[in-house]
Image (cartoon, rainbow, N blue to C red):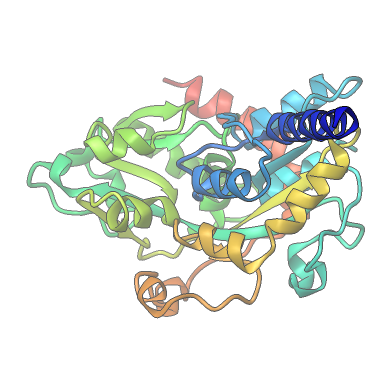
Length: 337
């Protein structure tokens, strides 16, 4: 009897220890904003499935890269999420270590580093997101040129490109959309004109402000607008500008020296599964994997024809120009206010 009690007690203690350890496991993902690409829903599902927590992290892409550089000798993060060009740049700085998650072979060749230092997890497009109620009777802008009209003064926001990857994609890519040359003059001339109508260059995620109408017009990822309209039922219109737009791959990387490397690899594997890709698609970001979406969900995405003029910019070129573009924006746009 005594022996049996000891065995039962030991088993109970082991169970408690295992459960405690299971519950306490944590993976740190930099740039894990809950209202962007459904990271809140994705990480909640992973915790329910495995017990592993991935806390929210409000850094944008460039802020993430800066943090990883500062922590290079003693890494705090396990993995990171970025807009494509910034992820490419972070990998080129040696901030990632190679890893090819399960499903790697199904990612198109142009959307991953052959050595596994970064890979696309889903994609989006730059769009004009409009809270129609907040326009107070003004017409919905249909193009980037429309945004220059004086009627939109103090109504437009885009993300600070020194912090957020979506803002950087817009700032670095508008030149190509407008047919500018290598000197980026057409793009920066446009941004200077647009500055007259800017409410702010957002340093924090502006999703909730768009929902509430505090921001009438937000230049951001189309998926965020589609989620605001279809999930949160806000009066949002998603405009793919008449001039065209920019395709934005969003990428992941395993941080070099990740504190929880083996657990993180399992998480990165899972992000390419049908389950995770579908969860991301529920926030209207395009899956990178060949998953079949429910007809009702697929029907809420804009038709492919809406993106006929979308520009796909080479990530290596954008990454090489990134620091210079941010400094030029800081001097010519923000510094000129």
